[in-house]
Amino acid sequence: MINPFSILREDLRTVFKKDPAARNTLEVIFCYPGLHALWLHRFTHLLWRHRLHFIGRLLSHFNRFLTGIEIHPGASIGRRFFIDHGMGVVIGETSEIGNDVLMYQGVILGGTTLQKRKRHPAIGNNVVIGAGATLLGPITVGDGARIGAGSVVVESVPPGATVVGVPGRTVTGRKPIEALDHGKLPDPFNEAIRHVLGEQDKLAERLQRIEESLKLQQDTETSEKRSDDRGMAHG
Image 1 (cartoon, rainbow, N blue to C red):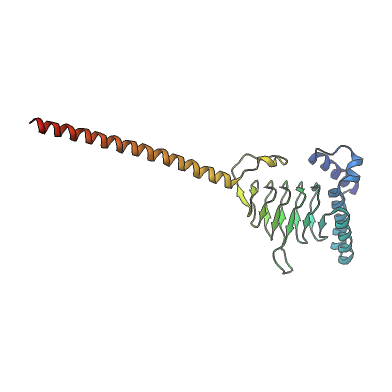
Image 2: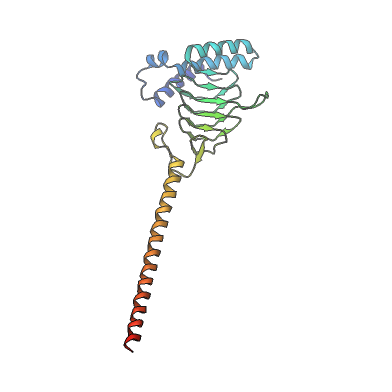
């Protein structure tokens, strides 16, 4: 059986590891709503698993009031999970979150059906989800993936991929991005535009060379024709 105190210490170490603003243990214990929400959720999830649904929902409602973070007691959350800032985060009933996941404020793990079945995302290990990102439906986000801030993700994400944009588009085959390096996330739209403009410049240069070649050819033909005309005149 896992020692609950070791889990609490692990949670504190996770905050110091993932938030450079964390200064001391006392501050983390009393001033981190993401940590409070996680601790309360573990208790409500235990109640939910023992079919004490009403009490679990009631306490999760209190959790939302206290922290600004809404986590359904049915959601499954792994170890070393950290919500930075946290306000506005919504995690639905059938959501599954792996280990070592970092989530920022305003993230939504939402459902897309009214049927009572799996309808929320499954998040793998070592995933980073940027502020304001929305993930909808029973999709899977692979291990080590990065979801850019403000992205809307409605399709599964392969392991190690980066997703940006609305709707979210997967960018693969790139150098891994650090968890906090949001400014270095790729922008597939700008890259596509740059590629098109680059191809346009190449076509313009090629067309210019063709025009210069045709003009040179025409000038040569004109010069030869004039020479022939002068030769006939002298003859």
